[in-house]
Image (tube, rainbow over all chains, first blue to last red; front, side, top):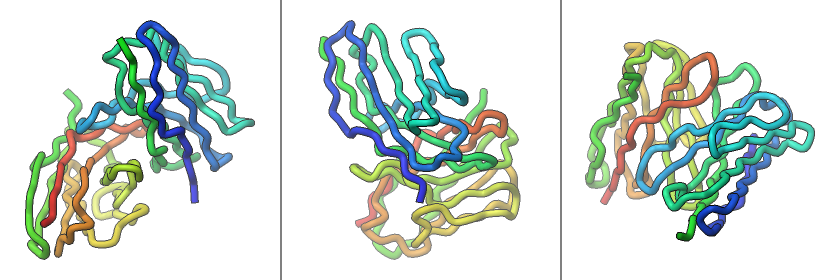
Length: 111
Length: 112
């Protein structure tokens, strides 16, 4: 059974701080990694994808992947109250369309 | 605009009354999938379809049926709904090239 683990939170950070969200996965053959943001009652929205070891930056967001440690993280710089949401980590195996989701980390950015 | 459209958005029904939630995508994707989301349990896959007439079970298929007669449509059928199927349902369709997922807006189902 493929598993994706996230700290459920809630994670509270002050406005302007860096929020750090973490995710570990069990399937060593996993090839694609995604972070989704989900506001309460809304559908998940893709914010970052990463496929190779290292960092990938997009605006205030940085995704980090370490396949040896089976670990992926998301950093949000200069956190804003509008970043308050649940963040879902999703992992896709090799040659598969199947996405396995973590249960999500709830982030609260305090003004 | 690339879209995954689900209907209805909200549905209240009673135990045992058959219902269908529709899902349609305009991206010509081969793969479509249904998820349910419950507090504390996250997103769990119900069924998926790799192409027309090709469907397979996900992690929680019990009590659900699907069909894929056309590429764009992937309805979710609850033949005899029960209260434990009260949930938020999402249809999703990823593009082949990056494996991410475009989600529909969701259907909130309550079974009384």
